Length: 279
Image 1 (cartoon, helix red, strand yellow):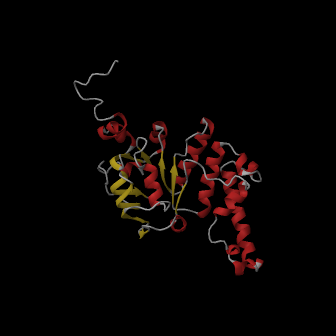
Image 2: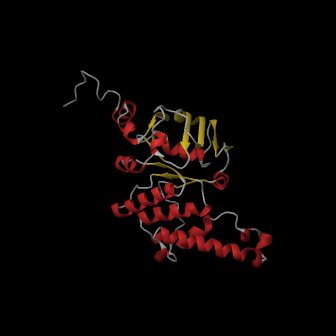
Image 3: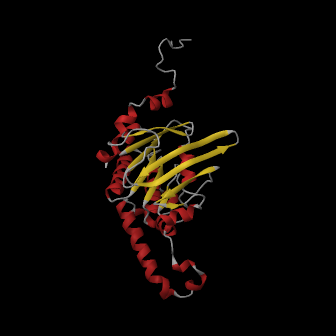
């Protein structure tokens, strides 16, 4: 995958060989502040794409918009060739695009297993008429529980299966949220700072899970500030600054891109004749 992407021009908005998510002319403003102004962005199918940029660059807002948790002021986007502009979050998830949050959204007074079961979509027993006919939904419920247990085992949360989600550590909640996202069998997962507040041991576990998802054919896009993480697992990196995409490319190319350096350090950082302030 990296070899194929490396053949592209490293320009903002570059067309990808097989894009899964395509964003066109999307803007989102809060009062007089334009948080997002993305002219064109494509996320490659089956790749790990990192979305980087300084605080306030618009990364999480872009996530919120395309995943249906916020509304754009203008623009459109498609997922797997189908328009999903303006669709609600649950409808976007049904299409196969799910996301996690920087601040985990576990239901603390439900068990770990119950958190998992709630994420499964299309449950027949949720319909009033069918709820009165157990033979209609019992088999599906057993299948959903089986999948939930498989995912809990995969993410090493089986021993916490019947514990309240509120008793989990911050890192374990990140694992639970990722596992819960997979209950809907998504085509693409968007992870908002999955490593934030996670201890080093669980960080390595999360990294391994992310690369495993890519290796299984899933598309992953994640926001991250730790450049070691970005450089270590990304196939492609997109840098945002002041709401716009200012650079794209493979990790090694983006790390040396002047626009990326300017975004993090400021445009005056390397201009000749600029003297540091020693006061």
